[in-house]
Image 1 (tube, rainbow, N blue to C red):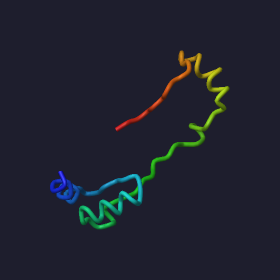
Image 2: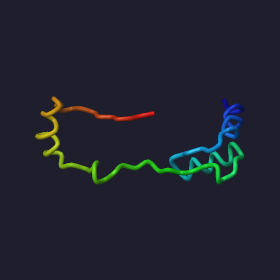
Image 3: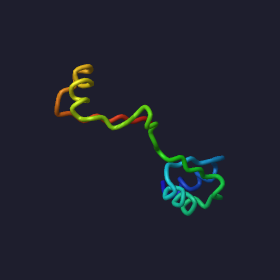
Image 4: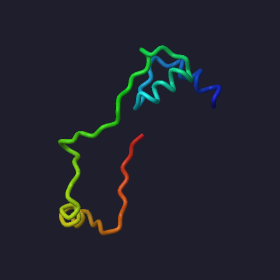
Amino acid sequence: ITRVLPFLIRRLDHVVTVSESSKCDILEYAQVPGDRVTVIPLAADTNLYMPRDKVHALTSIGPQYGITQPYVLFISRI
C-alpha cells in the first residue's frame, strides 16, 4: 500500500483532509501541489450540539431513549 497510495493520490483531482498536519503529510508523501489539497476541520454546530448538564441529560434524555448508566455513546459516519 505504501507504493500504491501515493500513485493513487496523484491521480485524484483534489484531496480533502481534516488537519494541516495531514495535509503536510499528503504533500510530502504523494508529492502533489498544495492547491490540490484542502483542509476542512472536523467541527460541530454549537447551536445544535452543546454540552449539557449531566443531571439534565440523565433525567430528561435518558428515560426518553431508555438509557441507563453506565453507557457509552459513539456516533460515526464514513
